[in-house]
Structure formats: structure tokens, C-alpha cells
Image 1 (cartoon, one colour):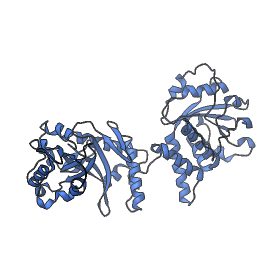
Image 2 (tube, one colour):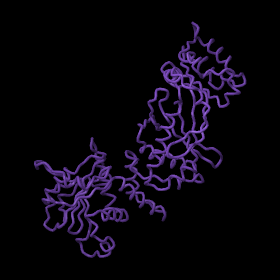
Image 3 (spheres, one colour):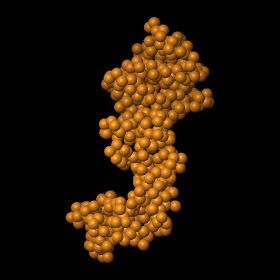
Image 4 (cartoon, helix red, strand yellow):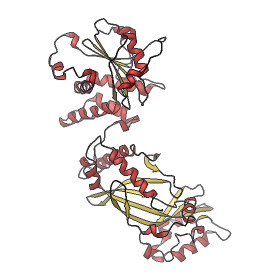
Length: 451
């Protein structure tokens, strides 16, 4: 048995760790408390261990059916000094790494622990009958095998039973048990709090519902929340680009010079029809416009109606000329999008000939003042379009204290991916790579658009 002096005082649901390592310690503590206080979760946890080779000889059904003695009680603790674990009754010792990525079995055999010299404190232990499980916990993909071996060798030299589990494994079990409670109208406060702890820092560990099982008929707020959780999980599988974040907005960073980002967002197409819209904005700034117009890109790309995405299919695409207004710090102010350019643009100006008209315009003075800008726009845009109202010209510019503005002649490119198609290709919770490839390859297809 674990002696009382080995018990850690932090194993209390109301007492949290502080300091730099607090999050990692709280994860370990939260897992231990869930295992101690939720029998369904404990069974799922042992089911995860039983699936690994060192445990496969143990029959879980038989194990849980024949419980009679006090020594059958499972003991769980954290932050235990290995000196307290040298019980002669321990016949089996198993080392477990819990990280964000599974560690290959060969790594356990090859790792050589350094000579001892400091006190070895375990992250978490599980004592059950004559078996001791020592768990080393990391909140990253850090290889902690050597650290685990140090702890185990203090208890019993030449331990050779090691397994690796991941936080994704734990999160899947957590969701599975919570779903069972949901079916019978109950909730486990320990699991709910632990999930909140994980979601606050590591939401990507939590499994998301595939699009096949997210249907528009439910509450729209919950529907949207489920959509974006799955989309965020898919973005983590994008391989050829970095993911950027501004506030709550994620986007794919691209470095083609003529555009900077690809954004995916869900939109209602009709009353009961949804799409995943992919957007890119070529020539969204004068610098981007310079890369596009001065390279003499053939204007024929503007007439394309489909985007062929490698590995998937061709999707409907819309390309609209756009004017963007910014302040002198390049902060967005307003835009004008011409969804019917044949009717609304009298003289096309999204081309190399008129590119120099973009850039800075001053309120007063010189040939590029606001009077000249208004005259230019009046000459090229149909009066019925009312560009002043659409750009909030009076509010944002004429009646403001601004002395200058920046203007760009760019485009809005929108690709529509039907939601029914997403449901067709996304049917398994763990099979998120295909969605990640769809996002990745859509961005790649945008990159080829101007070639």
C-alpha cells in the first residue's frame, strides 16, 4: 500500500497549482481526480491500457468481475517520491508516457537513463493488486522516456514494460463517457471540469464531431459552433501552409506576393442549404497589386468559373472586382465589391493601365486630392451603383478628420464548397486528415489561379 506520507496535499479539487508548470500539473491532477471519482472513466482508462501489449494478457472482463479483497482497490496518486514505492509486494512495474504524440516502442528500449543523483518524483502512479503503473506526463510531444526510466529504475532495475498513450486518447475517452452521461440525462462534474480545463488551453486535443453528424436542423448557434470546431481541427492538419490567427479568426497564410491569406467561413446559401466558402483577395493592397499588375498577368483568370482542387473536384467560383479603402496605417476602413461589373463599371479600371491610380490620395492639394479621386470614380462607376453610400464616403472620409486615405484595386475570389460534399467526405471523428487536405489543396489551387 502507498503510505500516508506519500500522499500529495494538492490532490484536492479546490486547490490549484500556480507558477510556470501549473498547467501541466493541473492536467495531471485533473486526470487523477477524474480516475478517482468517475468509475466509467476509470474503466475506459483501463480499457486503453489493456489494448497495449504489456496489458494484453490481462482480461478486463475477468479483472472487473472478481473483486473481493482490499488489495483489489485501485490507488491513484500524483507527485510521489519513488522512494515510497519500493514495496516488495509489487510484482509488475509498467512505465507509461502520456504526451501529445505516441512514442515508438523502440525508443523505450534505446533510451539510456543518466546516472541518478537527484530526487525522483513521479507525475502520477496507479497501484492495482501487485502491479504498479508509473505515468510521466507532458503537455507537448517531448520525449520523456529517459525521465521515466530514471523513476522506474529507482523502484526496480531493468524494467522493460513500457507503453505510450496520448492526450488525444484521453480526450476521446472523456468525450465517450460524457456522451453516455448525456444519454441518461446526467453529468459528471469531474469530467465536465476536466474538459473545460483542457478546452481552455488545448482544444485541439478534444475530438470533434464529423460533418456527417452535424445537421442544420439543430439550434443554429450550436450548429455554427460545431461547424467551426471541426473546421479548426481540420486547419491543424494543413501541411503546406502556416495557420495565422487574429482574434477569433483563423486563416491560411500564403506568400505569393499578390495575396496574403485564405479564409474559410460557413455561409447559408439558401434557407436550409449551407456552404463552406473559401476566400482570397488578390491585389488587396497597392504592394500586392504591383506584384500582380506589373507582372502582366493575363486578365483571363478573372473569367474563370470553377476552381479545380487536386484530389477532390472542381468547385463553383466567383471573382469580383473590389475597391478597398484604408487609413494611412493600412488599417481597413471600407470596401466596394462589384458583383455585377458589366452593369456597374462603365470603364474597367482593374488592370495595369489604371493601377497607378491606386495608393495614397490626400484630402487637399495636388493632382491626387479627394476631388480628383471622386471625379475618377464618377467617371468609371455607373451612377446607379452609388459608390459613396456603399463605401460610407461621407461618414468615414468627408466628415472625418482624415487628411489622406489609401485605395487599392483588388479582387474578391470566392469558392463555394457545398456542405453536402463535406458531409460526404467527413464521416469519421478521427479521420480529419482528409478535411485538412481539402483546405490545403484549395489554398494550393488559389496559388495557381494567376499562372
